[in-house]
Structures are given as C-alpha cells and as structure tokens.
Image 1 (tube, rainbow, N blue to C red):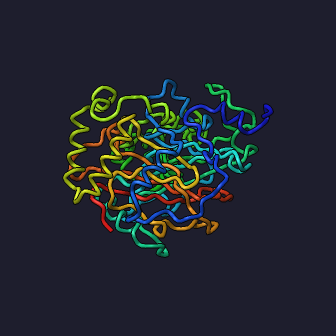
Image 2: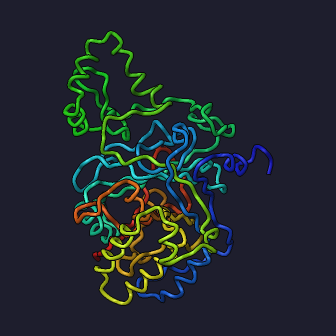
Image 3: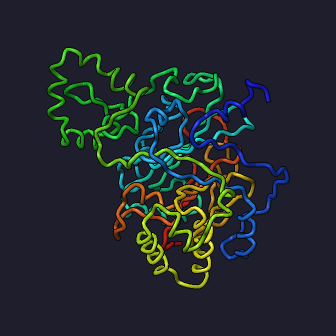
Length: 417
C-alpha cells in the first residue's frame, strides 16, 4: 500500500488502534441464538474469534491523551473527535435521574473499508447511581419502545481523512501534533459537555447545566468569580476557557471524575500460552487477590443454577489468561460478547436496529468490571457495579455529521428480565 494509503496512516497512530477485523467474506446471516441455544457451540465459535484486549495504564505523557493524538482512554474527560458538534440536550443526561452523565471510556476504532471512517471513535458515558443502572436494566428489556430511559449511553463519531479538525498528514505521535481548530468551549466543572451557559456574574466560567454551575459555585467559584469580575482581562478569558486551553489540556473543577488512564491493546492470542485459572490469577494480576475472591463470591451468591455456574466457569477460564483486561474488542462477523452469566443475555430480537439508517447493529466491544477497581470504586452494596457492558454499533457504520447514539446492553450479576 502506498504511503498515502489509509492503512499506513492508521498504523502510525498511537494508543488503541483498532481496524475492522472482518476477514471472512462469507457472511452468515443466521440470527444470533436465543438464550436457550446450545452453549457449547457458542463457546466454540467464541474461541475462533480474533479478540483484542484493552488494558489501562497511566500515560507516560499527558499530551498523549489529547484529541489530536486520537487516543483510547478511560476516565478523566473525553477527547472529543469532532470538537464542535457535541451531543447536547437530553443526550448528555441520565434519562432516569436527570444528572449529567460521567465519561467512562472511549475507543478509537477506525474502519479501513470506508473513506468516511478514516477516524472513528466510540464514547461511553454512564450515571454514577447504581439505582439508575438497575432501572436501566429494566428499560433495555422493553423491545424497541419509542424512547428508552437509559443511564448508559454510547456515541459514535467518525470523520474522513480530509476534515476541518485535523491534518490529513499522518500524526507525528508527539507533542508537536496540533489540531486545526480549538473546538467548542466545555463545562468548567465536568470538562465533558459543551459549556453553552455562562456564569451570570463573571461571564467567564461556562457550564453544561445549572446543576454543575451550582456545584462549582459551592466548591469555590464564589470567590474566584469576584476576582474574575474585577479583572480587566476577563473579557478575553473566554478564549482561555474554550480555546487554547482545550488544545493543551482542559482543567476541570470537579473532584469526582474517575482517574484518567490510557488504554493499550494486545491480541488475546498472545496470552494463549500464559498460565490460567487460580495460579494465573495469583501470579499475574495487579488486582489484589482478596478483591478477586470477593467479586467471585458475590457473583457466585447470585447464581441460581448449574447454567450460571457453567457460564461463569467458562468466563473465568477465558479471563484468567489476562485478568487485568478491562475491555474486549471484536467486530468480526457474528462475534458475540463473552457473557459472565447465563441470565440476562439478549436474544437477537432484543438488539434494536440503527436509529439512523435502519440497518442491523453488530457487537463491537464489551467493558469488564475490572475497570471499577482501577477507578477506585468501592465494593459496597450501593456502589456502581456490573457483570459486563456490551456495546453494539451500526453494522454499516452509517454516515452523517455529529455524534450518533449507539446501543449498550448491561448485564448485572443479578439479571432481571
């Protein structure tokens, strides 16, 4: 492939660089099996799929997580691909409690088969309330209502190589990379959503919602606001909040954001010769063994039959090859999540069609609960927890501007249907 080809430029991008794993032209149009299909056949198919594992690491350089580096990352604030046309309105909040959603992770996943997906990133957000997540699980079982109330939301954004925001030349992969535009100003409290509301006093601080304005005011902006109001440079400060500051690094006031990590990837096949089972967990995992044991016991206490136990044993055997994985990616034809338990798996009919083109959705990646350990989430009864979150996206990755909302299926340790 010549030097201007898409594949070459994708290879030079840093972080989690995922392209389509479709290498089988024989597309099997049979429906995904319902919950009562033969599990052994499903496990055999799963073993044949090429899976990419995601691991979190503290970034060596802060600039490596800026949007011009096209990062895959977890925690902190999102590195928006399209920095101007962000999700807005009710898309930004939990449909159940109305609180602004918190950034969970993003996956940079360009597809080489289309010009429009030269850059492509998937963003996952969720509410911090476990009560909302329980309600969310009820909602996902409602087959194709006019509107679902969700606490977990996924957005897809894609850009062609020639776009207004980034150079068409391959990234240098260092601090010299710069975006072409500063992007929309973001909320000074959460750094996540568009700051389209001003502080009425200083006219400098921006917010995505009145709730975040109140939180910022109570946490110290009340004093800062007086200083900004008296400063002769306040009229020029908007550029700092919404312009140059975003090209470098967005500083936010909230202390409740999850810690920020870079996501690095490895092919699962590289772990086939590693130790698995209890011995592998004891020797290879950075996660304390007592935390692993507590999690296993908690899940086992919820199992109601041999089906759950068999599914969990199969899941644990597969995960034990690389117990620190927080993400599993596989967009190949017919790929399916690795379900921890038997209950709560969707049938083919439970997965909706694309809201934009009406086409089928396909499984793309799943998020494992190990991520919560790295985020420092407590293992309490009311703390946020899940068995897995499976993300389904438009099979055609349909085109269009802005951010398109995709579909997340949440499986909890005690599934409700």
